[in-house]
Amino acid sequence: MSTNYRSDKKISMRELFDGQLEKYGVHEKIVEGKTSNGKRFLTDGSNGLWIHGDETFDGATHYGLGNAPGRILAAIEESFNTTIYSEHEPQYFGYETVEEWDSAWDELYKQEQAELYLDIMCFVNGLPNKIKPGTNGMSMAEIAVSLIAKSPALLSPDHQEELMQEIHDIYFGKDIGTC
Image (cartoon, rainbow, N blue to C red; front, side, top):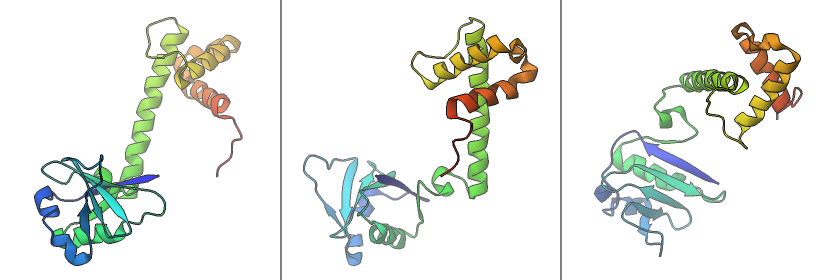
């Protein structure tokens, strides 16, 4: 398990590794065979954080459930007057709020579903499409063929939502419930 992080401002790698984090108990550790110009390791003696970037800090990654890099991240934030966001926060992706982030994901999902529908319609009609054998899209296209064979009206664009919902229900199962 890992988590990625980004800063809300540019930090020079030279400054990040010039020793100023030592006052917080954070220092660089060379890891044989893994440390490189673009990948360096910071530790507080117990926990570690891989830092990515050549000239500037591009991000960081911590690995493992028992590895808690909070002290290292706090030292960077304090030293460089910055805020560091994890991939679990909307700011990591450039959004200000969870609602804005959710809205962007919803819009992406709608776009992907529209593209999938077009590919399924092309597949059903024997036209060129982006569906590849062995993929989820192929399984869904085969479900569509079966549904349309039983109810040809599903070919009509007026029935797009109904067709996609039926494909979804069959593919994922109607009563899968929630966790």
